[in-house]
Length: 127
Image (cartoon, rainbow, N blue to C red):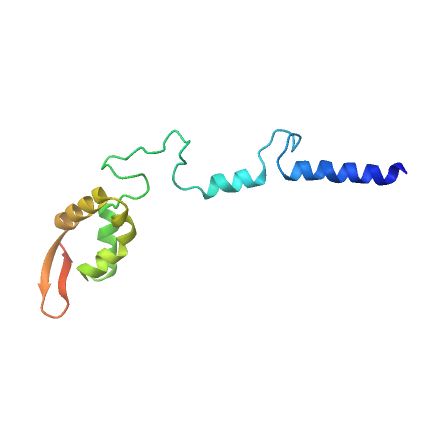
């Protein structure tokens, strides 16, 4: 019977489509490619923007802005333990020493480091 061989041919064609072999659609990208593109936040090594730094020299997406630090301090009534403030930005600070330098400059520009007898070193937002 031709019925059995026709069924197995169809199954093998379907397998080819599933594994991305030639004939896997009408030229449209597969769903997996679409998901991968959306999930990717930083540029991939093959991407034209890979390795480019932004204005302050840190990798794109990692820089810490003055507004961001100011917002964190405001959420904590304008004063926060230095240790806790560093903890909030730790992952990005550890990623690049330039980010840490920029972060410290932001702290000096928008706040004052004070020595609290109970809390220890704190950052107080300037008025």
